[in-house]
Length: 245
Image (tube, rainbow, N blue to C red):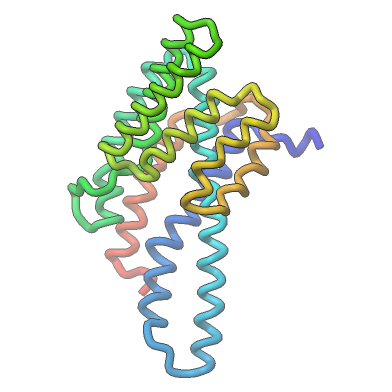
């Protein structure tokens, strides 16, 4: 059983693979399915359509694991970060860098205010935790601390609504719950409550979280920051070049 334990970087790899599956399905496989099977003219085509449909449903389930894992890892990263403010600012910087590739894939345009990339949501979550940690330094515990946490989390959720990042306030709430409930053995899984709203398959993320060994593991902390905008650019190029159509 010891060999099956996952480090933080191993959990992040699971999240990255899940994200790739989700985005390849959403921007390549699903559009192909909609175009090819828009009109079904034969029984054979109907059977083929169902196979593609089940593939998409499977990809959706796998893809739902990514965001809960990123929320969990964000809370863990914040907890062990030497400079928490720098952590939040770094995530914000890469959110800005990722915005153009994100917009190109989602909307085919460079600028679009209607929806921002998920790094903005995660960065808002980090700033929320940073504010909560300042309150923790002033308040030793008890009801006052929990009232402060609730107020700070509500403010963070409101900020997420204004920013319009993916998962908006649900992401900030999940990140906050992972942080606040981290020391409770089973109660911490209530952190998944806001995450099942977009997809009940988010609960699959419980498996790698249960296997997490609490260690950072080996890997580059900048890998995901670079990979996130890069994979959007690659998908955009593949789509615009009609590689799959």
